[in-house]
Amino acid sequence: MTAVLLAGGRVIDPATATDRIADVLVRDGSVVEIRDAGGTAPVDATVVDVTGRIVGPGFIDLHSHVHSIAGQRLQAMDGVTTALDLEMGLMPVERAYQRAAAEGRPLNYGFSASWMMARAAVLSGRTSDADPFGDLDILSDRAWLGDSSPAQLREWLGLLERDLSLGALGIGVLMGYAPRTDPAEFRAVARLAAQAGAPTFTHVREIVESDPSTPIDGTLEVAQAAMDFGGAAHHCHVNSTSRRHVDRTLATIERARQGGAAVTVEAYPYGAGTTGIGAAFLAPEALSAWELRPENLVLVATQERIRDEAHLRHVRATDPGALVIVEFLDESDPRDAELLRRSLAFPDGIVASDAMHVEWPGGAVDTREWPLPPGGQTHPRTAGTFARSVRVMVREHGLWTWTEAFRRCSYLPARVLDGIAPAARRKGRLSPGADADIVVIDPERITDRATYLDPTRPSVGVDHLLVGGDFVVRDRDIVVEAYPGRGLRGEPR
Image 1 (cartoon, one colour):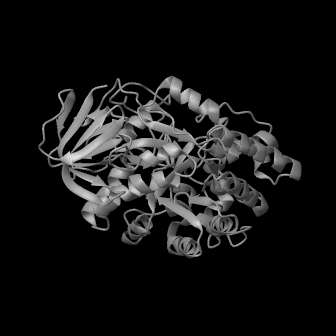
Image 2: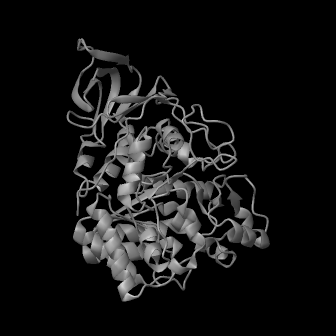
Image 3: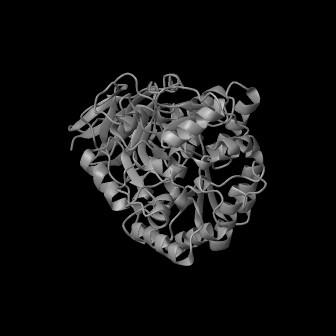
């Protein structure tokens, strides 16, 4: 393999707080040397002048549902080198890794064991082929939303345990989609994960401010289980589950941390999310808890805004897996924009996208074409989460240094996985021996361009992106023949 020398850039390693002008030598998929700039290049090295650019470890997205070449290419242009589906996961996990490897991926990938599909297999009798695009219709199946008998609980816990033994990166828990289930079941999952040394990645159930009748406040549930069982708990997209109550939920997390709980938290810089319209919390009778109206929902595929309650009921009944944008904060309102910034600024908070696949008219969900064909629809966070976070937090508001940006986007995400996936220890850092997953950024140009109406516009400002030492982005554009992504897997539990 030809060596690559990234010459003369501002090299940042968040693991050591290094920030200096240097050359980075890459060979055989690893960083082999960080040296003073200006030396003689090895004779076999491809030299790339990155003067005036920032060179750091590629961003690691713990929460990506793209599962496609098209989606991963948008994420590559956003600076991502590893895209993991850990909130939902796929089942069976071995099939998920096999499919990704067979199809080829521009970025590294990985999956958790899926709590949702394990419950559905037992309570609804559903089978899954680790199909990320076909399983959303489960949202209309009410059978899996109920409580489990002791025998059923043992059976679906066994499915999770099986997938942990086959390399799943933890357990993904979509508790927010079954918010009335017995809290004892969540505690059983948290206990299993802690005993296996595996993290949980939870979309929490409703918070008490929005639903006083909730069996338990969602954030408190995750924090309490982490304290009681000693496991590692990751709280997904705190901005969307907390909405205008984010200060209280972050305070709950901080108290748990001070008490010794291993709780990590993520956020993305948007005031709207995306999910299947059949989700329990989008039922007409549930919207008020979220301070929403039907008109706050927009169908992704058609950009059609839900008109009223009757329209919402019709779409939920006829196409429950249809992706819908959910407007939970008003990004144009300075108060709501400040809430988003506070979510990102929370100490040791992690940036994660909750990226979704791209869907074209007619139902296609992937393509090897680049640039992407027109008409594709998704959430703009697929293309713009990391560039927007860096623009807002570093350049516009000065809330992060560049070192802190790489710590939030690269180093801390990798550390969430250190205990379950030894290979993660080589990621999120830029030093000899680290994986050559590297992003080269123009600090004056980096920004998102995707919007809710034009969501597949790639970010700008990523000049180069290497995955395992191979260029996926070169000279500000995708290398269409590059599929160097490899599966990141957990050790058998």
